[in-house]
Image 1 (tube, one colour):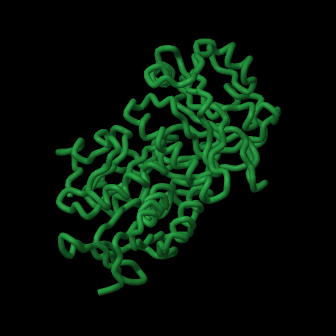
Image 2 (spheres, rainbow, N blue to C red; image 1 turned 90 degrees about the vertical axis):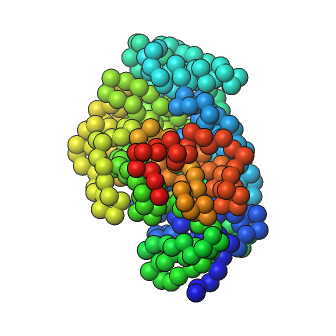
Amino acid sequence: MGKAYDAIVIGLGGMGSAALYQLALRGLNVLGIEQFEIPHNLGSSHGLTRIIRLAYYEDLSYVPLLRRAYELWAEAEAEFGEQLFFQTGSIDMGPEASDVFRGSLQSCIENGFEHEALNSRELTERFPGYRMPAETMAVYQPQGGLLAPERCITAYAQLAAGRGAEIHTGERVLGWDILSDERVAVRTDAGRYIAEKLVICGGAWAFKLAGPAAELAQPERQVLIWLKPKRPEWFQLDSFPVWNGQVEEGRFYGLPEFNPSGRTPGMKLGRYHHLHEACDPDQVDREAYPRDEAILRGFAERYFPDGTGATADMVVCMFTNTPDEHFLLDTLPGAPQVSLAAGFSGHGFKMASVIGEIMADLAQNGETRHDIALHRLSRFAGEGARA
């Protein structure tokens, strides 16, 4: 019948590694299965840096999750013995009536977050790397910053292994079957495993692993660029807050130079939904082309001219989008022993630590103390999210 476990986690990227750790922390006999290495650059959790910010305008129900995420990242740092979070402050900016500015400001006010509202001139005086349009308004929130995603994933995987979790890499899941109310079988290209609970954290592969329940989590090709600054002193951790901004060309995001490996120096930025290219994660075009570079450099040359020197690197990754760009966090309809984390729509990694806790709760108890009403599958009833 195969070796038996209390729980199996499929996918050990940001969410899966955190879920594996949380399950191991609770004393469960757990197996984590990853089709690539840990970490890897073929999914959605690579690229040296990820933004984390408290001033969340997407929905105010994210804020309690973010508060807990910050706590859990600090705990992971302490246990792993390595800095994973780097505080830079965060900027959310756009025209005064934009969702990005107005919503972020409202989030700060309603939650009592320390913040400042800056106009375009004040923004540039404070942080000279920014050269935004005159109509731009910005919310500066000092607790924002960046996470080092590859190190976060490595930390959770190693900490989970240290607490007894078994980890298989280079092993592809072929499918899974419900054996009974208390048993699930997972089939891979290397074997068959039995568990009481299954946690699916497949990232861009979620719709292949969770079937109809995850078919609304659609992968999308995304391109990132690193540019060597002409004025490097203006684009460092202590002088260039992470940012998220709305301009006439679309919504973009960026981070300061963060180069602990000496491999990819420069300011990093991307455009949300880049070219709106839906993709198959097994066949995504991983080449970055001149058209990709032109979109990102054109933006940077206009709004961050002192940061736009030579292109240091470009990388292709993937978003996995739901129609409303909120997450999928739930047990599967008709299969309560199987839980799903998917559809993070380009803004989930910052909450990977707390999502790991949520997924461990769902696996253990079928419920969680965290408010995940916004992310339940039932919101898409009638739109294809049925098991």
